[in-house]
Length: 579
Image (cartoon, rainbow, N blue to C red):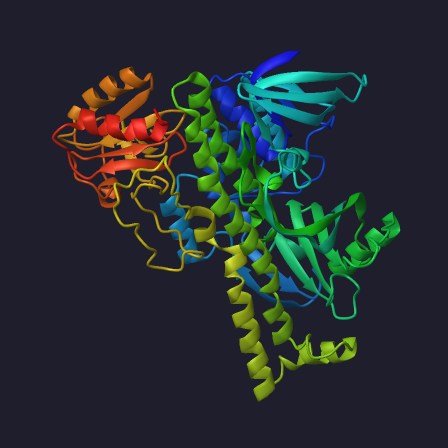
């Protein structure tokens, strides 16, 4: 029987991220996947700032940037009748709007990029294996049994046909939207699977002459009378600029899945391009369903699920792989501390408490974004009739010098602008706030949001929020506050007059067998706050302290130096670790 500390089922973004993190923390783990390959289609691609921060913590940000399409080529979300045809309007998205771009640059040391899963997955998987993960491809998970000391999983080698068992202290189910692990442990789900049907066509074609002047990852094509996507709606997604593409369109989920031949797929591509003379090479066709489902609980006993196994939704807002990787970042450090014996198993209960509300939020948001496309159809008069000729006439009427034309033009502008909630929802991506036993607020009231929490990221130094990013300096080099935290350790941030926190960290750390870094920021301290950004965002006195968890979230803060910092720090960490 093969034995390990953690068994991971699934090699997607969640599973590979969990493996890379655990191996980085020195925790023995085995990863199994029934496939003999990693991601073979682009699938997920939007990689937001919070996920880039996770990759940065892993030392993989540079690898991601090497293969990613940079942010400057992402932002023009275009609505048109075809790529070669009339443009109806566009929206600056993904942080490319001037004000939004400033907010993005203030929010994080990282940049949102477009990184297809075919590149992201090998980066994470490769790092995991290089750091010690024992990966077994073509190995199918079959069943599991739990007892008070661990989990025994039965797997099958799909090459030899051999069935054998793997014994682990804990098991992570990261086996996707049809998760057998989640089913086997009976995770309670809310929502519905299969609320819509879609088909992807991946193809190669040089489309630079139609798109390079308005670079984007998404081109939305409206063609009344077309059988592509309901009211003639198709999506052309850039995979690699400007010669690799993915088309998405819907089919009636109540009908049989259509059979798509290569010739038919090429015809669809030419229809959306609007130019039949462009050479098109079809590389793959696949079907998928639009889901609206999330788990109320993410674990049972010693088994924890993450990624699509617990939040299943359409790709709207580009939240899927991001949320999956962030699930892993939340759980991995907790598992590491429990496996080492530094924390009690009760710490693992905070995984569901912290991540389940986030999962439900992003499932609801992604599905809501689909419905928010309807005002665009309405503004163009596409919902008033089923006659394609009338639809085209209604679309043309927006060009007229009439009251109807003026109303349609304004309605279209407003409808496209409203899609910020899908294509520039910085708050959805970054405004995560945790409430659990791993966050100590000392009964202080939770701060609210002063601006739209879906659109605008609002950093906070309150416990449960992700540590605010600020540029600090050491030896002439700018460093983010996020860079001096994380990496599998707790960190205390303090300043002038906060020297007693160092002794507290040494004393309590030794008592609890817990590594605690102490970083002092200020004049002639470990790091300089030359811009004053940290002082403005920290919300504590110089001699106070902020305790940051390994996942960059604030566990606790002391606004000033208490009479007995050792006792205070001990009280807080004993509570968090469940000791």
